[in-house]
Image (cartoon, rainbow, N blue to C red; front, top):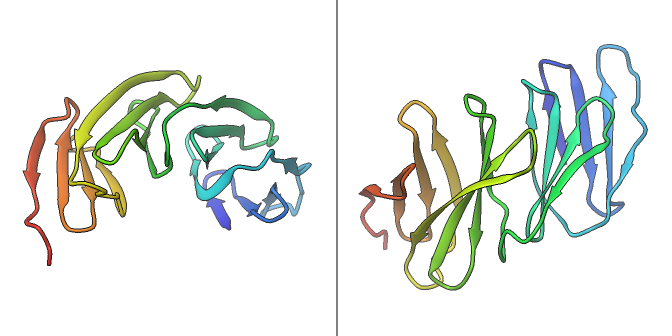
Length: 169
């Protein structure tokens, strides 16, 4: 998987099979020392272009790296089964990550992106086995939009449903 930081002009290459993260400075051609990863990583990742950080979702959490050196900044674990889809809010320097505790209870874990500290958990429910297919954060309206198999849920920051899309058939 390839990710690009347009501000720093860094290309990040995540080799899943080799469990290795590489960084190339596309302006100079300089290669950073690769980061060897401990496994358990999925393919979900994103780049924080404001603070030059790189984040990778793990099986039940998140690992953050310094984007310049690829040194591990912190690991957040125990975020629930199937933690993964995440969005970044640069206005609050927060990461919002979807997690599931059981077949209907779901939550959005709020993580301070600088420290890795979990600062909040926003609970919501879905139909049985209602798996999130996509996740979006509307920073202007401060709403989460979660696409499920047969519905779309829109939540505010207090976990109150703003509107629910009709069930798709």
